[in-house]
Structures are given as C-alpha cells and as structure tokens.
Length: 198
Length: 107
Image (cartoon, rainbow over all chains, first blue to last red; front, top):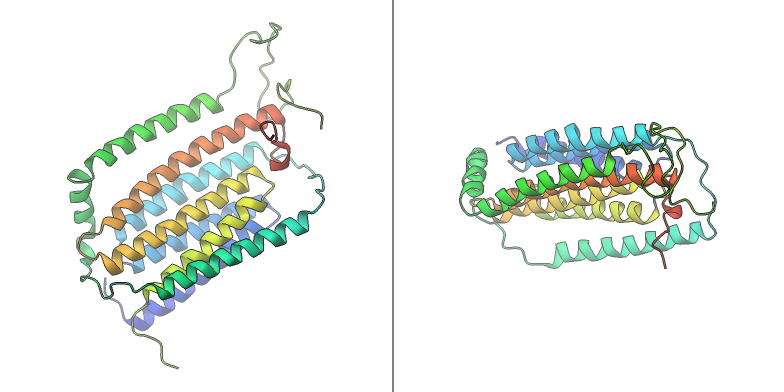
C-alpha cells in the first residue's frame, strides 16, 4: 500500500492519539462499561496501525478476534458480574498508586532509551507489501506448521477449560454437605463456599 | 520544522512503550478484576505493535513478526476466555470482583 507520506503521518498521529487517550481511559475511568468500549477503540486503532505497516491480514485478524470476540466477551463478563458495590477504602492507596506510577515511568524511560540508542539495521530489506498474506500462508504451512497445529490444540483446551470453569453446577445435592443444592442463577445469592469474614 | 518523510521505527516503539506502561500500571492498581484482564490485553497489544513494526522495518521479505503476532493473538483469545471463566467462577463463590478480597492464597 503506497500512500503519500503526509497522509501517512496524519494517519499515524490520529491513530496514536486515539490509542494513548483510549489506553489511559481504560485504566482510569471509574465506570467499567466505558472502559470496555474504549478498549474496543484501542483495538481498532491498533488495527489501523497494522494497516499503516502494510499488514492487512493481521489487521483483519485483529478486528475479528479482538473487537469481535475478546471485547464482546469482556462486555458479557461485565454484564454478568455487574453488581454495584462500594469498594472498601485501603490505607495507603494513594502512596501505592504514586509508587507504581514512578516504577512505570522508569520502565518507560528505559524502553525509550533502548529504542533510541540501539543501532537498528535500517533500512532493512524492502517490504513485500501486498504479498504479505500469501507469505504468511507459506510460513504457516511450512516452517511454522508445528506451532500452528499446537495453537489449534491450545484453542481446544481453552474452550473446554472455559466451559468447565464457567458452567453452573448441575448436581442435585451438594457434594460436600449432602444437602440439596440450590440451582440459583448467577445473580442470585448462593451459599458461598469460600467466603471468609468480610 | 521539517518532518521526516517516513514514519521512523522509533515512533512505533515509543507508542508501544506507552501502551505497555499504561497496561502495567492498570494491572497493578485496578481493583476490578475485569479491568485487570483489560490491562493484560493492552500489554499484549503493545507487544504486538512491536512485533509488527520490527517485521515491517527490519524483516520486510520474510515477515516472521506478522506470523508471531498471529500466534500472540491466538494465545490472547484463549487467555481471555479462560480468564473470564475463572472470573465468573470466582464471582460466584466470593460475590465480589474486588481484587483486594481475593486473598485466599496470600500468605
């Protein structure tokens, strides 16, 4: 994909601005639903950056998997556990936030320094541009065949694991105490097994 | 002031560094468990931006970084599914999503 360099720079500026603002919104907004929608915006702008880097296949995969699956999954989880609860105050929360912000700023400075002091082997070989999708296919079925097959096994394991972990209990009686189990929905209060004193 | 004609590689690296650091901060400081999972997704996306930038700038012919990014996306999808399932099961038992109260295994 060849577009004029000015257009490219404007696109990069707009996308990086949405990316950074969205990322800060995801971690800072008090309402978690807004955070989830902003996360979708972050995923979309990352897909735009991939398009700027001549990677149309990965951009499509990003939109399909992240926006279409992961973000919807997160919204469903928010919907299922969305109980309004007042979080109890913790002593020293502000100090903890400040300290971790300092650590993250230090990590950021380190990463930026590495990015600017490393002698990258630029310019590299010319980009293959539109042939990228065909090249990815060749990689997946020749030298990356084993990871590709392992990824399918991993997805199957994750699917079965998620079903086993998230399904409701269908036992007629409680396994531990022997009394009849309540088949309440997720939102209804159930006999908690692990609750310690609040 | 004249802008460089091409977007430099360092611009992508700095952008990914910002995203990664915001993700780390959110991971440490979030009290809602769903937000912790969102922060992990942010960090994974930062790593993917790095992989894609290196693949485009330094490895233009054999785009191995793009293949790696696809594998990272696959693993991230599996992680999100299992993580949210664990979260649902945890919510059923503890009836809260406050990270400070998930302290059963904490010394």
